[in-house]
Image 1 (cartoon, protein in one colour):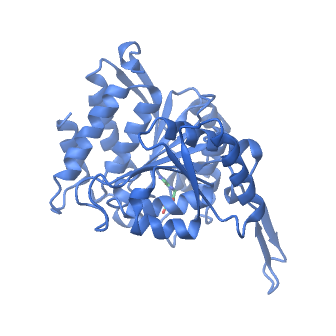
Image 2 (tube, protein in one colour):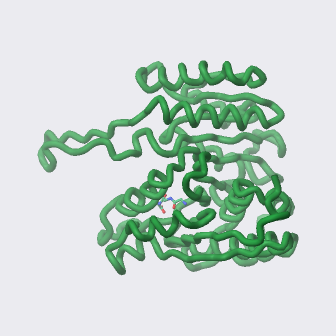
Length: 354
Ligand code: GGG
């Protein structure tokens, strides 16, 4: 599908957020605007001030009316949120839980898509360019991130803290089916379930049974299973074995940071929080956080944000523009010499190559 032939504008919500978020998002928007303009499509941008700084100024995390407004957009481009470490004015985790996770849960972003590809010589010395090309389909609305827990006997030596993971048959099945669909469209057609079913027996067996059941619908797709600990070893020693990984919210969060580390670092790692049923806009963001230590210094690599915009275009069906940006990013990464460049210089180079 290439919607560029028919649609004339994209109604895009932009949440730059905190720290380096505004710097990297400015470059992603610059590149997006140029790529879609070449297809005769305009970007209609609506900026939303949300994040730790906004909380300090207003006490707001994600008001209901802002959430309702976001629902009217075609997609959301998001930078990063997070307070500076040691900023005691902001309760720990309030922005991540009440803004970022609230967005992902409310808009039913059940597919957290994180592709990993090795370009040039920027990544693992254990792999050659082209040898790492896999996607992680991380479940995005369940697991231990749902806030199902609490504290008993707080402040005493016998304090009890629980954080109970949620795994529903519906939630697991829909993300597993998404992983098989994606594998079916890829040359290698292979799904690896990553979990820890020898210890986490209840959730692990639900995931394993679901993979076995869904696999029957996709006879062309092969599948295997790895415990999370084994998966981390193979990701470093033999990353070319992976094609599509499906896993839960927590394992996927950790594994994809490792995946970023072997493919050039977190500055290149893109992600999409996708509502595959299209009942609400999907949200695209670099995997990295707000990096307050380098904020405002033009030191952040905007490539992860730009590649997140590529996922956004693919989701909306603007495949020509997506492939053009992707090619410009690959050329830029492959030509890197290690010489430092500013955030804007990288964005400018990628935009100029379109
Ligand atoms: N783009 C991902 C993101 O902003 N995640 C939130 C996060 O990790 N915040 C903590 C931080 O910025 O260090």
